[in-house]
Length: 299
Image 1 (cartoon, rainbow, N blue to C red):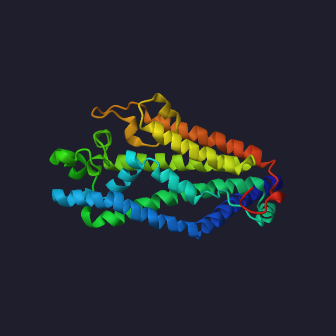
Image 2: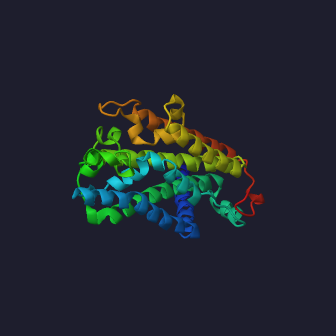
Image 3: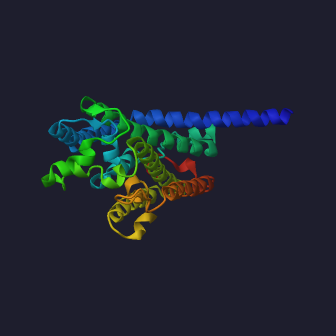
């Protein structure tokens, strides 16, 4: 009975330490001057997407759905690099280390520390996407309605103004999305797929750190994002080997028929399996990592 109590107490302490590590890293991340980039992101989204959608709404004397700017931002072929590229910029030093890391590891243990980093990556991914979602909702609120139906700006702009059929307003959200799912369903699937994409990027960086090749992890992550984004715009079946294509909801659907070209469940499994494999690799390699040699973030 006593041994059981000790085991439960140890597990409790481990969980506390894991979330302590995650919370500490999250506060440092939020307070990092690099977060100023998010304000630039908001300005860019407003200028490139929201302002154009508002222009379309005013021209058609109607409103847009409040969730459409976020869906457009994360599904536009013109911005396919945007969300993951900014995220990797914000967590480029993940996991962050300095001269005090060794002392921190002594208090928490390697296992608790790396699990805390994984929890932090969840916090960071959700915060990043949620910040984009909230900002788009606020910025478009004056010209938006709340409802589970697509606005006429999305579905009819190209038909109403044929001369602008190839323009940005008519192509932020294509028929392969609005013909196959409701805005709420598109929002949920887009958010979850993008979240898994960001988690995969985090796990690639963490694995690179665990094997002692932080820069290699960064190069591979950037390469996967760039190559995958380029292939996602092609007709090659190879594009489904990369996270970019799997993270975009409309690419799974036919243009008109409510039929999935590639089952979206496979994309969820794709992300989950890769994340788990990288997580296991990180846990294995971190056991042999020598934190006594860490002096700053550049290992």
